[in-house]
Amino acid sequence: MTTGDITHELVTLRDYWRYAISRFNAANLSYGHGTTTAGDDAAFLLLDSLDLPIDALDPFLDARLLPHERTLLAERIEARVTTRKPSAYLTGRSYIQGVRFHVDERVIVPRSHIGEILFSEYLSPEGSAYLPDPMSVETAVDICTGSGCLAVLAAQFFPNAEVDAVDLSADALEVAKLNVAEHTVGNQVTLHQGNLFAPLGKKKYDLIITNPPYVDHEAMDGFPAEFRAEPAMAFDGGVDGLDLVRQLLADAPKHLNPDGGMICEIGSGREILEEEYPHLDFLWLETAESQDAIFWISAETLGVKAKK
Image 1 (cartoon, one colour):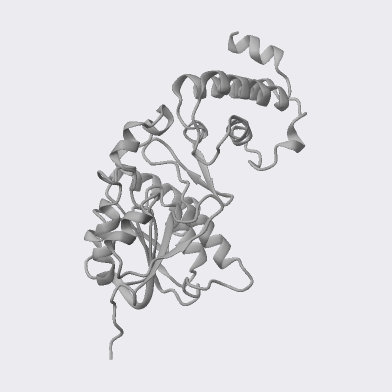
Image 2 (image 1 turned 60 degrees about the vertical axis):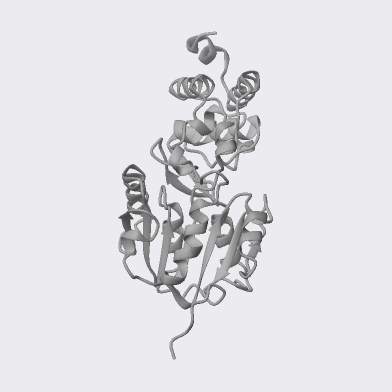
C-alpha cells in the first residue's frame, strides 16, 4: 500500500494508531527510548508529530486528521519501520517527566532515571531525605551531559546554582546548547567539552550529577538497530560497563564540597561495585523501573573532610 493509499483510507488518529501498531509488530521493532511497547511507541510518534500532549491519546483518537497531517503520519510510520531509528529521532523531541528536549542523532535519546529521582524527591511535600536542599545548592555539575537535559533540570530545581555541564562530544554539546537556549537557562548553565572532570580544573561542587556510558561490550554487541542508531560512545562503558564509573568515584572527592554528594546512574553493575568498593556506603535509589540502577554517595562517604 502506497502513502497515497494509506492517507486515503485512514482518516482518524485511531486509524493511524492501529495501523502503526500493526506495522511495528510485523517489523518486530525494538523499544526502550521512553516507550516499551508497540502501542506506546506508536502513540508517542503520532502525538508528538502532531504537537499534541504525549500522555493524552484518548481525547484525540476519533479526531479526523487534515490531509497534510495524514501524510506526515504515514511518512513517519514508514520511516520508523524502514530505518528503525528511535521515534524520538523522527520527531526531533524527547521528554523527561513531561519536560521536552530537542534530540537528534548527535546525542543518545534522553531516558535517565535521574530525572525521575529529581522530580520525586524535590516535589515531595517532605523534601528529600538525602539530596541537598535545593535552595542551598550554589554549584552543580552534570558530567556526560549529552543533550544537556539533566543540566537544564538542575538549573530549574536549583535556582541559586551555577551549573556546569561536561561532555566529550562536541556534537552532543551543540544539541545541549539548543536545549539550554530553549529552556532559557543560559544564565546558569555553562557547557564544557572534555573528559569527565578534566575541563573543570579544581572547581568544587555541592552536587555532582552523572549518567555516564555504562553498557558492557557484550550487551553492545547484541544491540538492536534502534540502539545502534545512537552514538556508540554514549553507551560504551568498557568490558564490564563500569570503566567511567570507577573513574568518577576516584575523581569525585577532589570536586565535592564537604556537605555535597554525587548521584550516578550505572545500569546493572551494582554487585560489581559493591564487591570492589566494600568500604563505600552506596545508597541505592528506587525508581519505577529499577531498584539498583542509581546510587547516591555523600562527600563524607568518599572521604571529603570539612575544613577546620
